[in-house]
Image 1 (cartoon, rainbow, N blue to C red):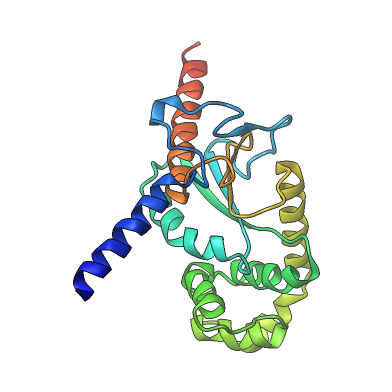
Image 2 (tube, rainbow, N blue to C red):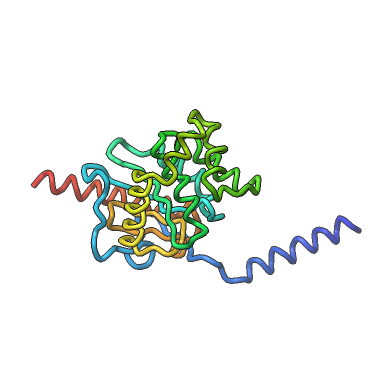
Length: 223
């Protein structure tokens, strides 16, 4: 009887779920992605760091739970890209609470330990519930990845890190972004989780735009 009741409850739950409208737009075939529906074209291009590459910028925040879930997917996707693609993480900050995490990220970039510490930072915050809201907390954390605490403390509020923050803030303003995660392809195309069905679909749209940009560049080269 308990088994039958469980089956009935499960079937009822499935029928309710099927009857509810989808929270996200339906997934489109890869060739059917449409400007204004699946991605946005920026009014002005934000110059990529290396214009010779097809830049894919990932705008994220360590405090963002969606970014935490997106990070393994986008990192794996980035590793599949051809050499003409440059993947550039950009840490956003539009509140006082986000600034220490933005500083921590760019301190890791400056000290060349970002590749070692990046996923671990997400895990520390979202799995372990640990705050990294001070220079001292970042010094303790990043010292696990081959740098001294003093190097972190010296870099955290340095001119070099301040410059990286200013560049990131300028990029985010140019992208016209107010939420994370989002992807910007070639400084021209913005892919938002608000316009697609899933994080996986964000990457499908980004791949479509990478391929589109590559084709456009090849056509220009032939002229």
